[in-house]
Image 1 (tube, rainbow, N blue to C red):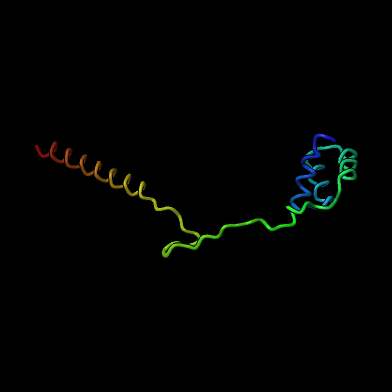
Image 2: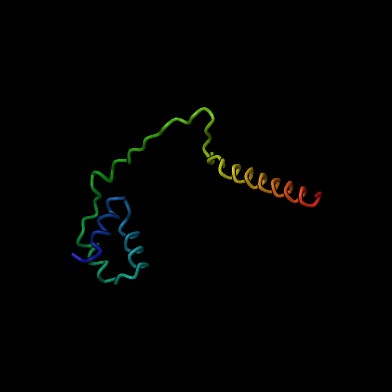
Amino acid sequence: MSEFSGIINNGLERGWSKEEIRTSLLNAGFPQQEIIAELNSIGSTPSAQAMQPPSVEIKPLDKYQTLNAKPKKKMGLLIGILLLSFLLFLGIIFGIYFLI
């Protein structure tokens, strides 16, 4: 067994063809002769687990939730209010200073 036999087995379990696995390993820099020898030594039938579709839990959307809903930016609003309050405070301080 070579160092990438696990990669080949994983690809076959996921339903990849031998050609797709060969191309991927060639692009990764593995030697072609070793890839072909390893592919020939491994069976081509995927496991029964790979034949089953993956189980996916689908949750219903909330009443006001959309697919592209982004989290609310409450922190940005808070920072904006604090910055505005600080500028208003500075304006009052400088205004009092120049009036006296």
